[in-house]
Length: 310
Image (cartoon, rainbow, N blue to C red; front, side, top):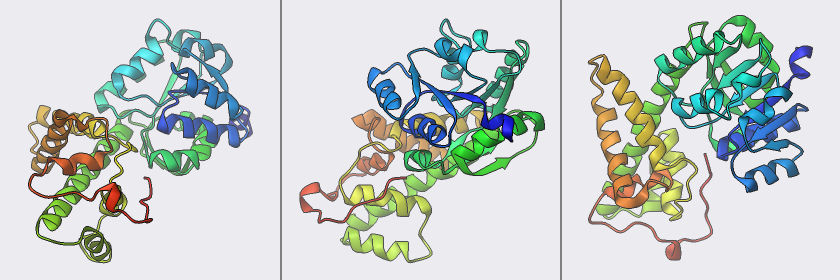
């Protein structure tokens, strides 16, 4: 829509995902403000043609649409309603696009509080990783009223190749994202367990990877994450502690309803153990380091093959 194309957009959180999203908006022709506490992130965004600020409040008077790319509901509430929050300075009718992984009831509460200020919320968690964020090729799973969708349609199109409209019930986007995170975490943990078992049994790890990726046991996470193990590269594309947080959230919401999630519980234990062993900031493939009694591939033994980021 022409009106959305002229919208002024603010992105809060210029981390691995938020930076790619903000630069995608600049590349799509939007006047884009970016907020981050880190001077280096602000400088990088300025260099790409964005307009960087240190606090959400500084962008409020300049934007119509705010894309919040922070970690959880608590951080979302802080950037909206905290002492330097954006909400008080936004014009009535402005839209908040919330991309954090949150419990559905937390998103409902945010929407209700924003509504009392004349502001609108789109519950819009994201998936795809930093590389797809920078390409404007994310998947967005969103819920909210049709008029809110319509007012940000071109912004979403600049960020994603697939936008799922999951109805007008606030929190449904977050519920679907939790299902996605359940599967992602379980699949990463299963991939790590399978590789540990195979290597411990004497399999060549690179040959094992080649066989499994051409066989029925393959998964997207196995194919994407095992190269990090093969290359001894645990630079965080998505960290162990992200899955401690997200699987913890899945577990807690299910436990509240007395709904059993045995695979989620075991995967959460594995990621928590990896974090306790000092790997919380490493790539989530580092969950393989919780298994004893075998040698992982080392950087010195690697040839020039490389793994692809998420």
